[in-house]
Length: 272
Image (cartoon, rainbow, N blue to C red; front, side):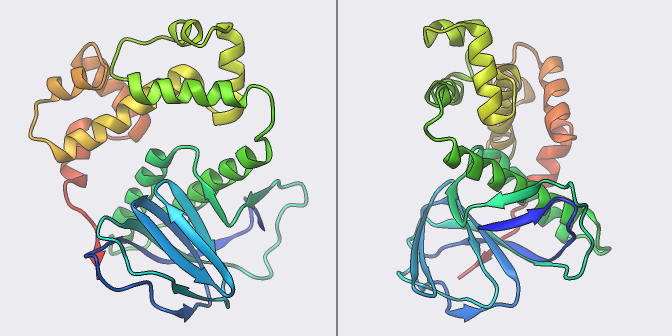
């Protein structure tokens, strides 16, 4: 497990999005840097030294520097994964009271859609001519998401975890409907305040924030994938009017829906 202080400087190298053509496999190599792999779709199978990893959609893998890794199987045709390389600056003075980020090498992420959004932002920043400190900040946010996954694994047997995940599943499948926190609690046969507490402990979001985020993530995909009006996107994603949709979308992404569509209609990819 890597323990990294949030104040401990990192230096980003580069990153990208791999889209498989259904042939070849991950090359064998030993890098000087850390590498994060996040599988968006399909399954990536590779070996680091003597350890085999099968990384499914929604999972991350942290590869250690100076360890040989190589693909164990050919790339499946539906595989898509993000990757990025970073270094940890040696000799830096981290605060003594800083809480470290505890990262499990291979884990399932709590919010894969949010992690996809972070990688997309990283690739956009990377394209800029003038290097920005935003690259390091985005990578720290990615690492923080991986920390949440590690915390989830450690708390797997804690009471209330299963209930929170049931609420999360309902949000993912019913976000487009007029759902409320009270309705979620009624569906799960529990007290609304208790459900809100356990959900926030697990996912670090209120139930309202989670519903809004799920709606915004769905809207992000529709905006770049479909030739539909803003009103159609809003209604399909559970917003009762376009004005409110714009407000919530901007709160979660920092962009208006129109700017988001213009910026992310272009994919940043590498293929093999």
